Image 1 (tube, rainbow, N blue to C red):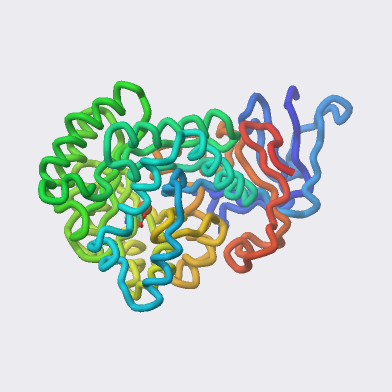
Image 2 (image 1 turned 90 degrees about the vertical axis):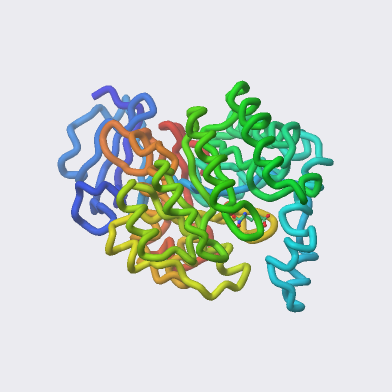
Amino acid sequence: MSWDHVWIDVNIATMDPTNSAAYGAIADAALAVKDGKIAWIGQRKDLPEFDVFDIPVYRGKGGWLTPGLIDAHTHLVFAGSRANEFEMRLEGASYEDIARAGGGIISTVKACREADAAELFELGRQRLNALAKEGVTTVEIKSGYGLDTETEIKLLKVARELGKHHHVDVKTTFLGAHAIPPEFKDNVEGYVDLVINDMLPAVIEQGLADAADAFCENIAFNLDQTERVLTAAKDAGLEIKLHAEQLSNMGGSAMAAKLGAKSVDHIEYLDEAGVKALAASGTCATLLPGAFYFLRETQVPPIELLRQHQVPIVVASDFNPGSSPICSTLLMLNMACTLFRLTPEEALKGTTINAAKALGIEQNLGVLSEGMQADFCLWDITTPAQLAYSYGVNPCKEVIKNGQLVHQ
Ligand code: NIG
Ligand code: FE
């Protein structure tokens, strides 16, 4: 055997759907890595013999391996703070009130237009470190706090640079249609034209985005405007996804599903017709419990319908300064269970196999099986449910990215 290293004395939550055990679990398991990929995985007793003097052996002390966590929805490149809006909301103002009064997303836009790339990079790096320490190995990062061509490009470049300089892989998403900038307050169609005819071609030309997103909501873009943006992005070769049905039912999810969106995100107000549309197109439903919690929402996403129609459920942090200033993917597992009644297994699927589907990387990531990329974590836990059950003492002991130990 010419492996690079071997793991023993571990249990493995493979999340492999071909393994019918809960979590695709293998007790008393072993795993071998070669050239950044999983070369062998199974029960320890079946591990082929190998030369222990030649191949390093790591012992997991009876802990659990899981796939590296994937956070499929974040806005982690931003400047400034919105703590003042938090205080305003505690005094009775709503998220919508603040947005309509020119605060909200627009206040972060002002801070991002003023910030230089180096400052944004450093802020992003610290946040990426925080996620990485809790086992995140792949993250999606959106723009959307520039709302002019120059600043949208700046944010996407920073996100791409973070991916180059950090072991966490970064997928970037162009979110030019996140909010209406003050300059276009009375000319929303004009802003949509700018997104489609100026920003999008610049983003494509510089290869800065893997996907495009928009915010379909009564405080942002209507259904027609959103459809125009997503159609243009799709025609330009990007994957598409959508912030939809967060505060009201606008029909955005069904429209995005028809266009072949990878995911629709938030979806508290999604109805059964919308759920059926997702099922028909294989679109993932991304739940963002951090935003639900922080905005003190009460409308719970239609979890039971998603289960009935077998829509892949994703769980993500939505980390951003306004609706989810919580930089922890791990905490989202807990919140998805306590707030949305997901099972711990569904929550973990939402940050592994299903998160990989939402990002279109499921051929390589999200599951531990032979031939998959060797991105995994060792956790000091006695059952995988513990990842969703408890929070505060970080159980992440080691992180392996592309077969290399990157965090201990
Ligand atoms: O996903 N809903 C729209 N966009 C973000 C919030 C952005 C902000 O408030 O800064 C979200 O919740
Ligand atoms: Fe978001």
